[in-house]
Image 1 (cartoon, helix red, strand yellow):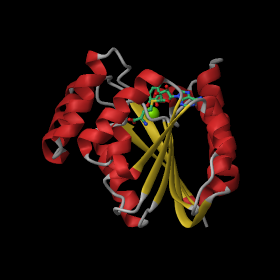
Image 2: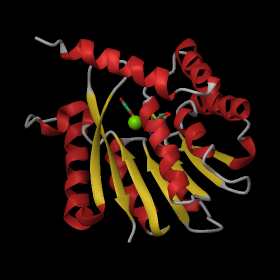
Image 3: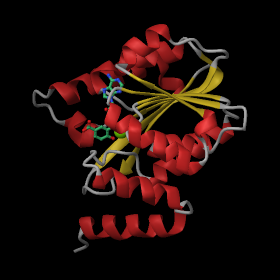
Length: 221
Ligand code: SAH
Ligand code: DHB
Ligand code: MG
């Protein structure tokens, strides 16, 4: 019988060999571990996918909620034209410090505005000079709906809103009482009640756990 874990890890190694072309990504992952910052960044295949989506929509204004060490931010910023802007929000100053270094190493600092503080508070005072083309929500999951609604009101027609971890490591399908998974389940129910026709959830393998999570895509009509 095939060992599914073994297949996962071999497929992930294959994806890394096929898709990685940027030494900055490896540097960020190394520093993340070295500084004791949680390794909860998106996967390599997700990073490439986000970058492609940003290119496909011709993104010039991107909002990211949940910077961590700047891994997803580098992927997104690389899709921007020189006058494009990634606004990325992070509550943890230690994470933000590494992210600043990551953006500098990647040579994208001029296209990135990093705002430190609780994202809901930052959003309250955030002024945009143009509508968003893409929003990537990847922070405290119970606020997903708040973040989604903020982004929905400010994203242009044809733009995209993406939300990470909407399968909660597979826990969304467990009936047991689980506040974290429950908040994500309620969020997914809201999206499917209101935006199903222009949405999907893509399952993806996670790199360092034999686990599965999901990325939600919503097109703004
Ligand atoms: N997008 C990153 C991963 C983000 S992990 C990547 O894929 O590379 C989630 C991040 O959200 C953590 O760094 C955490 O500190 C941050 N976060 C949690 N709650 C937050 C809040 N209320 N406001 C802003 N950031 C928050
Ligand atoms: C967690 C957060 C994430 O954004 C993620 O991709 C995985 C885990 C977390 O808070 O545990
Ligand atoms: Mg995530």
